[in-house]
Length: 68
Image (cartoon, rainbow, N blue to C red):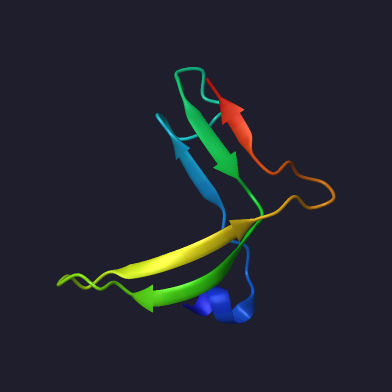
């Protein structure tokens, strides 16, 4: 929630190892310039948060980086 209030970047990395540049990574994607647009409590019976994020391209970074 603090990242949403302050407007900090929300980076996302989903891959099979710790980085896309790792030689053992077989699949992954990375988005480095996102903004959190909404944070709300999940409607289920668990204590979870739903976080909505929009990713944009800045002048120096790509929108998405994909490795396969």
